[in-house]
Image (cartoon, rainbow, N blue to C red; front, side, top):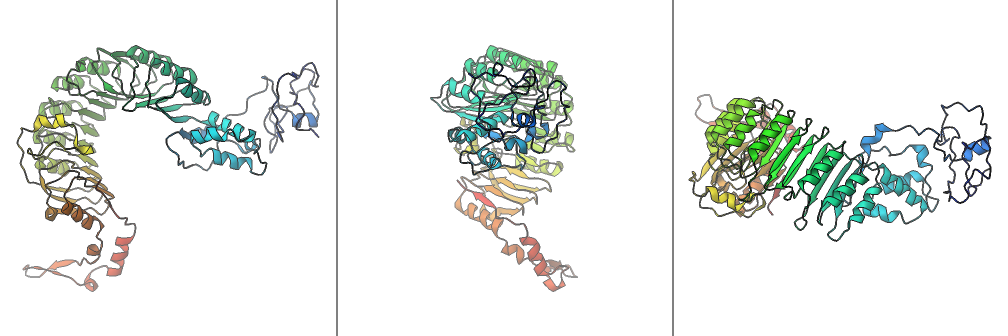
Length: 584
């Protein structure tokens, strides 16, 4: 019987017998208590039948082969388990409460038997299940408990494919590098930077994550992104597997030349004064370019849009947010003839008019999402949208459009049967209202651009839609009456609807889950709460029927109705959850 403290000799020793000259006594050998591996393939022998025939020149004894751990590089690698690759857990420094959605373990049962607890009483499989639910900070601390926990933590780091890391303000580059080196198989990386970012960080990521596919870098208010356009272009060109790149704080880029055959998603925010933009990404399908709101931004959007159309013919989603957007930029985009375009978002372009809507409708007739928030389109533009996209459009966002009235909104909901989301924030506004300070109110400098435009105050809005799920009317201070009959509506935003009359509010939306009423008067909040959570009135409802002479309508007793009252109450109470009215 082999003692666990004795050195383990590789079966690949020449001659098939261990010799003192072939074993390196200076090399420290790890203890492998109970680690009985196959001498031919190296896999654990528990429940194992080797598929490799025994060699003719090497005939180790059963005691030697069962107790040996092969250190030779000539033995074949264990078969990979790619079917569990999508079950790898994400490591997050921000989220402490983890939930394991998949009951399958990241390792096979024979591999779990190799893990040994420090106390010797806890099964190895339990250690794995417990440690994999720890956040990375807890996993680093657990590695100091004992050797068994340290080995388990090391295996967990190596098995990680996704890492979400928050970098504190005083953290050094070595902190990020030490964490990334623990995850050689990392595929998705998300960094929340509270310290400055520069090219050294990109070099560290490129060196530590050779198989990186998705990278996201977000910055706090105090952090500065010092990455230039040349450095970002070099990083994208070197990472041949990179498919998704999302980065915030890109004010120092100046310009870039992106060349990648694998990149499919590109998000860049806080862009400013781009002098040169070249996109050589044939597989790019989604691009989001968010420019700064500064007046001195001199980015050439026309050349940028033209470059996108010439080299990125597979684009499906386009989002551009800039105060420099104009009708000329829209014409350049429509000339690109992107046949696969499904989502188009052109935000904060005050020079985008109804003529721009006509150009979009003539070139892209299969849009599923259209976002023209902050534009100068009117009800006529909404009419063109309804005439072209009735069979495809499901999301329409027209926030901060001062020329739109309640009539245009009602027409859109009536003519777009597939509509599921609609944002009309700050459209029906009272011109005498001051700049709003709530979260969904937008920038004050944008609101001053249409303060001098007249609106009809005390407007009425009536919406009846069978598929609408989310409706946003934040900041509609000119709205006086609201009647909603939307059985699928689950999210309603009424923030800062100050002039909405509580007596002229009717919500017939049984699926409502959240109603946002921040900045509303107290009487309106009470009316909302009473309508969304008062089920007694619905239960006491009695059907009515008109008399034979059509003089008036009278209530019909429940015993004359087709369905008894008890069954009606049961049907109303099953699956009903109270609606959450958010005030703060």
